[in-house]
Length: 383
Image 1 (spheres, rainbow, N blue to C red):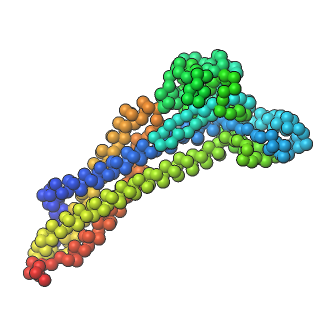
Image 2 (image 1 turned 120 degrees about the vertical axis):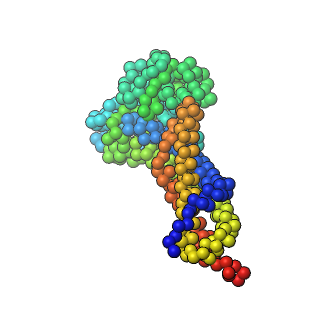
């Protein structure tokens, strides 16, 4: 007999039970996706600070102990001052290095949904130096004015929103009190800030190197010049920031997202499995009737599989319909105004969640196959 068993009959005639399963799957999909968007703000927000800014500016500070034991090329037996002078002369002479200055620095904090990062920025004594720095980093003053006297700073637009600050407020007041006044707002692709020192209030003293991306490996340059770096030395360059991004953002956030997703999906899978087993028990007589009127077990199995694909397909559709708009609204109405960088569209995450739903579908084969093996014709129901 040619199979004409319709997969829609059960879906249409059991809307409550089918709707419960669809709702559970769709909402689980949406929740996991939205949580992914929120957790990924740590990755998206730290990208400008860890991947873009170090392509243009680096910082280093070498201890006297390191200089003393290092054989700096051209000044192997010189005193510490001459060794550093030789090192800086060679660094400034490199093609692609725009300037090297010794400066106090502050840190601009960025708070994501999970975690925070601080980006160093220099304090120059002359407005012209600030202009030069802003031009090099591609930052533009969009509000207020540039620093003209000690303790004045211009801060990145994103940092201002993120830290709920504005022009006229005190910057890093929790740490330095009323020392650094915000006088301007700058906009850039890498959260650039700058300012002028106020006596010796700072978060460190460093050589500030303005370079192009090809010269972003300061550690390699120092090693080439015979400098033997150790734990007492500080080098913030492009490779170091990339490693921080890989370890502290990509891998850490990926593990958190995967852990949360796994917990939710295991719960959903168990719930759906229990619910589906209940559905199958309620349909024993229906399956036996199909067998009694001549339908083969594989035809009944095909009908059940089509039903499952319909349910999971509808769940996936509504999951995407709920998750993506909610993520865009979350981004536009909450995250962006709070100065938290976010991306609402992650097609790779939708693909992963779709694959996970298919995995759950595969798990449901177990109770389906067990039910198929137990199908009996009406005359054998009492056996």
